[in-house]
Image (tube, rainbow, N blue to C red; front, side):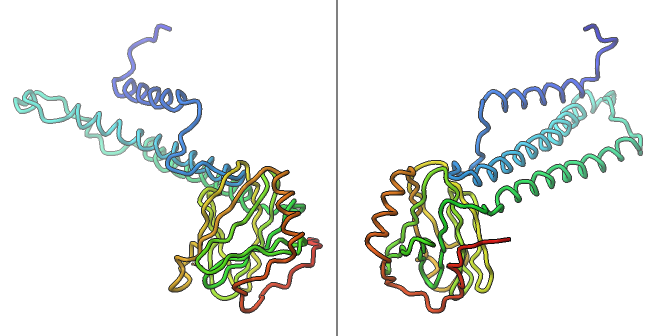
Length: 276
Ligand code: CUA
């Protein structure tokens, strides 16, 4: 297409920068995770999507600032020619109303779009399943964890100094009821890309849908006292069949005795009907 007259050089520089950035992003068929762990749950996948979107937006904004800045710095730098007094000067016009409106409206639009996606992701991540395949009460206490499989009649815990293991099936929704018996704790599995606090007297419940097998580290993410650092656990995600046989084994063994009983049960629970 034969354009009538060349576009100004600044426009050409900006266009090439945008094209280069776009090509770099698209050339890797999958967006990089920008430092986030590979999600081990569907909910973590949503969080990762939001993180990537924010990162790409930040890159675009950065280019939009840096490229014109570099252009101006280079074009109007003080050269030998300038010292002789015949340099070109940038326009010294004081006001540019359309541009001022633009750089007020565009950032507001960017924030609105980011806000929209944040709220959407928050709904996806915090949605609690009405019909979970597994329900576990996660009890946090100073300084350990217990996993009570609701309706199955057994509890997983660990002797002092060892980490208890939460076992979950792949592809099924698990509801985790987060209960604290003393102070605030926080249930954090980095590979799920989310944390949720355990607050005495507050009924926090999350749904996790694991999507790949493996053993993942979990820990308390709220400073809860001297031995806060000891509050580690692991999450083991296994195929459904393996989970079923593990469940049957645990049930056959009867409710495991708790080596570290939580002091007071703030939980009323075991009323299975969730209702609404
Ligand atoms: Cu519990 Cu830190």
